[in-house]
Length: 394
Image 1 (cartoon, rainbow, N blue to C red):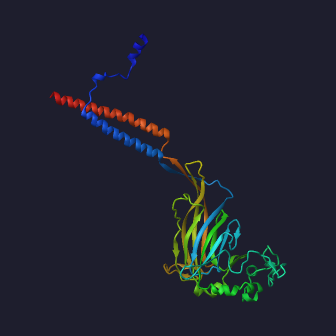
Image 2 (cartoon, rainbow, N blue to C red):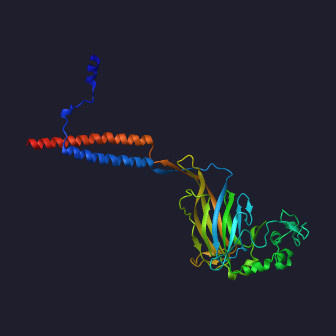
Image 3 (tube, rainbow, N blue to C red):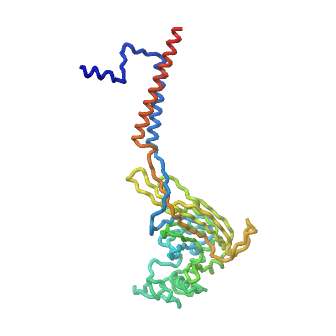
């Protein structure tokens, strides 16, 4: 008992006798207002704790030897599908010619209605081999271009596409497609003529090296020579009065969207360019920056993608002065088409999801607020009570 008596001297929390407590109307009003304020502040702190924010971070990109996915959907309303192709090249020397395995072409009439969906151009076949009536494999004539035949069938051109590719590699002109038995069998010339006046939608995806380079949509068969990358434009130029390089870019992205469930728009989505020139060249200069999105939930996958900015230039390959800027003289030469020139940034942007506050921070903020607020309301209540007593005495 003596020990307990000595401890009472150190009690900083003196107790009040129940009979000495006085309840007032002013104190009740302050208590109600304080309870509402406390509820609102605690609710806001809880919402801040639940809030998810994205914390950006920029570092040097450490990735090496990665591939990049390009998704595209572009429409040429005045160029038939059999003229248009997709080529890819980069500074490492990688060249993908007339990519078809991941590209779908859709034939369109002059009103934009779908005529047919094709996975390859006219005169191509899924099997490079040919068989005679007895079912035996034969070797088709390459008409002098056997040394440029497809590597799958050395010295043999078993369909019209193989013959055309061989002649393109030899840089030989084709005067009449009916001169080739393969093209006659596939009715190539009639099919070619039937598509005059049509348009084409080209959609698909590419996987390219993550280095500077370009991919482009251009008419004519493409081939590589010592002089560089060339396109055979003879047939296209003969019909150029019926064609132009008007195009609509419905979608262009480099990798998956950061938020698949959210509507996302890239800089060139919905971009439309109109021209009446069949020999027009559009060049888009794209700067790609790697993005990594780290979700809050560890169970959700990390998304590696790319964002980009773009500038654009256009000119006629015939040269001459620009209509909008007569003082600017464009050079003559080049290939008509739509070119996307890609440059890769060495930086990586990391977007990391975090909560607006930690749970410990939430508890700390609530307790700090309650302690300060109770002290403040106690002082206010005592002040009002003292003022009320003084007014009664007077």
